[in-house]
Picture 1 (cartoon, rainbow, N blue to C red):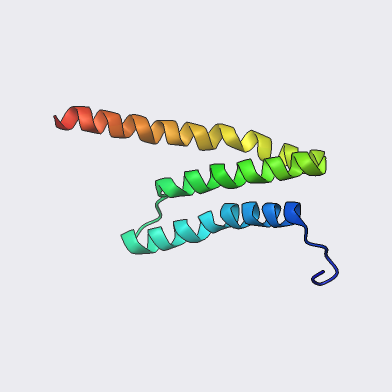
Picture 2: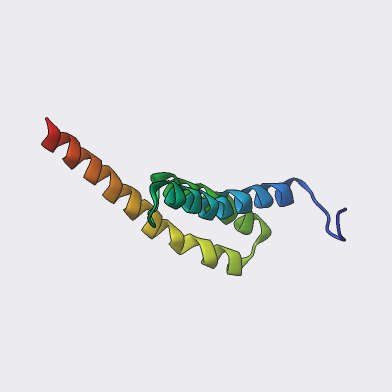
Length: 97
């Protein structure tokens, strides 16, 4: 028990998902500072997707409709952005040959 909260395996799983999801903002901030402009690195989308998957599983297990509805629609922009990035890389590789 910590601060009145019980931490079982599912709570630890949920916290890890939350840490993964939350870390994407730090990653984006550090990346933007390094390149000197606001820019979203690819890892941001992977962290978003991974954190959302973990949190979605957690909220399904907890039977929390609020949590499920909060994370379920997130997959659309995350996957779409990864598709756009992959297409851009393919087109860039094809144009450079």
